Length: 181
Image (cartoon, rainbow, N blue to C red; front, side, top):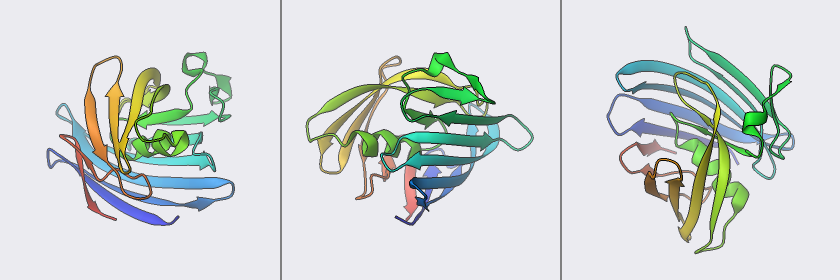
């Protein structure tokens, strides 16, 4: 799969450009996001390596002039940062970067739920611009062939996500909308 996708945030203050392509043993996603969160402007560059089962194996993220983050994972829920174990992320297979709808694709593709099925998961949540990871509980429910319900178990936030044939978000109500790709 080779894809170039762009999303705009709903507020009209941000844009993401993502390139997704094959890599040895899986896929690589590289992206640049320019946005704003609660009045704080940021830029974010990230690179995700996922294996053929869509399990995250590495994340490199940086906010120019701000924090950087490098994580590696074994694909079984164990994470490291700079060679040190991160037990607080144990059990997390996926990441959720707050500034992008792309990371919803990871559990959608990995779980491959049957229509009507739901799965609760723990993800490594990465807030932007702070880039301080922590575990978060989420639930995905497949509503139809190309529609999922995303739920943040802790906050109660819910959103129905229409997806394209590759599992990429087309519209994230109130947060992001697809511009191209």
